[in-house]
Image 1 (cartoon, rainbow, N blue to C red):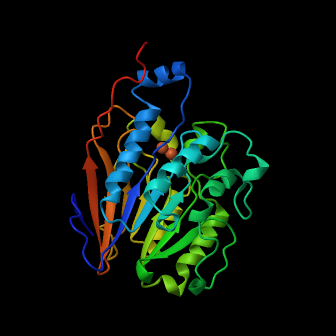
Image 2: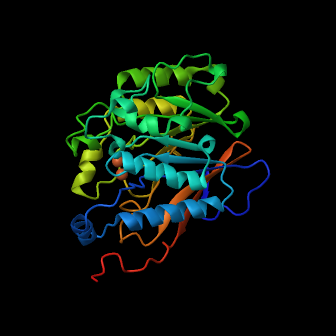
Length: 321
Ligand SMILES: [Fe+2]
Ligand SMILES: [Fe+2]
């Protein structure tokens, strides 16, 4: 595993995956609430334009697959899901997109019957419903396993060289209590299914990438809210992924770019990467928009940290007439 900042022109035989996280797309609120948000340096319209700028930049990078590790919406409102889908549809085809749910993608309210999707955990109905065409319905036949739940899901990419596994880490904690909702949890059923999946002989020679929202290890605590971002079962999960030869864990939730590599462990390299700029894409403090590109070529992964300045925006949002 090597790192760089510029992926350069794409080589023949190279497969490129891009990773972004936590766009937190919200919808227009009352002028009063927008003003309140602006007092803490946040703005939904800035967030939209920055998210579009990231996707536009990505479109010039000859990307083969896009991974978004959760918190696509800010409050899991139906109109927010529709906005995210509409923006993504302009830049990426569903068969080239992978999404996993974040804690902000879980509705605090009762989910309508219309959103119910068979085989999906109850609280994820709305998320899975909106991204239905992005999720594979079952494991690829060569794995010889029947999927019992919607998560974990598996995608085989790069002509069979790469396996991408998606996890739901939003758990079964009370979603109405905001801070508790930040904790991560994989759940026993999903952990058992993941264990069986990783044991499959078909996994042996593949490059294995796992996408999830919460961080599977303790990350530096920068604010008091970071203490509520802990993921239960993180040691069990990290042990399982390391022992199963997983190469790359992609996550978000922390709202800060972060990379950890197990170079001092035995002979197998595991890299854990958090994507996303500080405070998501909606903060005036984000001097740069960042996302990651992973180039896979000859069974080697190179990590490119892509960063650029946000587009200039007119300062007329709350102008008095
Ligand atoms: Fe987030
Ligand atoms: Fe989150």
